[in-house]
Length: 366
Ligand code: NAP
Ligand code: F7E
Image 1 (cartoon, rainbow, N blue to C red):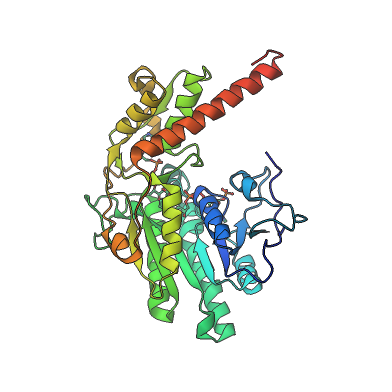
Image 2 (cartoon, protein in one colour):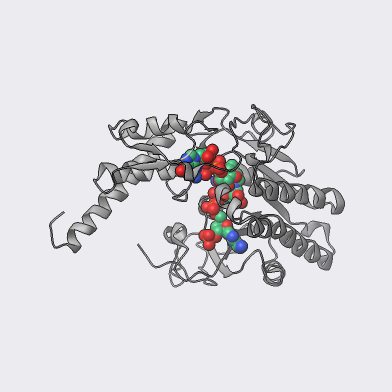
């Protein structure tokens, strides 16, 4: 794997002349940030991303997009900056310096179970973080005093906001949040709407249902399952401990959801959209499909550990994305079966690699 790009490193554009648009992404190192960056680079954007300082590299999901600054034939541009959504000063400085056309606000403590352990931190990054970036944009717009410079803002809202409201959930379904994460997202969601109504800012919210991929964080349930399938198949793990197997989610492919973000910001009128597949399945169903892909029976390997239960659960999510289909012409392109196969195959390949590395370090031929 090539070395991760150092923050604040830029790469030259492939074609002469300025690229079409400049985007700023908070949360660029996350699952969605990586798919969105790929999409925007393919459209010849210059992409600026905010990266948190960490003691280890945290840009692995972007490694394949890194381009040596000396390579003049490289496509697109990706420029990374140190920053944090808990730090207003750096957000204001970056917005002023970058002067973006589009801002995709994805940064968040995004784990629902963890939000019960870290409620104050979650509210700080998710809710206050959104106010901080919106304030930075408002000040910037005022200092520019030009409507044509109006930046377009995307807010990563979540189906968790629906919480206890029964399915199907659409833009008109009442919100009944069930976790500190969902409450923080609801505040962020209404902040974006409020800045749209109060200041005329171009803010759109994507109410995204669960979306997954081989790049999904390892502690979210789908990736936890597919990673375990790969490791069990390779003989590296024996048992998979999970929490509530009866919870039902509407799982789609993250690449499709990144495309929806971009489509929202291409519309002249900002609005809010549910993005979902319309199909729901249980965690148990997901286990059954994922283990079957590897020729295994999940009942031989999965055990329930109450440690993974949540203090309050969201029982069932199933989104109605008809508004997005109608107005954005957005459709999911990957079925649940294809998603499971894609994730399991990637994790089987990873586990085989891990096995080979272990064998080599033990002095054995893989
Ligand atoms: P993710 O993989 O957890 O990525 C979160 C990103 O936010 C990472 O880049 C993370 O940086 C960054 N971040 C966290 N705290 C930060 C802080 N204080 N300052 C700056 N950056 C910070 O999440 P995702 O799945 O890509 O989701 C993207 C967004 O969509 C999130 O806001 C999430 O809540 C929302 N969302 C996700 C889903 C879904 O199913 N994936 C559904 C609805 C909404 P590190 O890499 O350094 O940790
Ligand atoms: O849990 C159950 C768990 O952590 C899904 C985030 O991207 O999507 C995500 O939030 C379900 C829950 O995702 C385990 O109780 C069982 O019912 O994969 P998850 P989430 O909580 O739905 C929304 C839309 C977001 O916005 C969030 O940012 O699976 N479950 N056993 C488990 N979950 C986990 N994590 N681990 C288990 O062992």
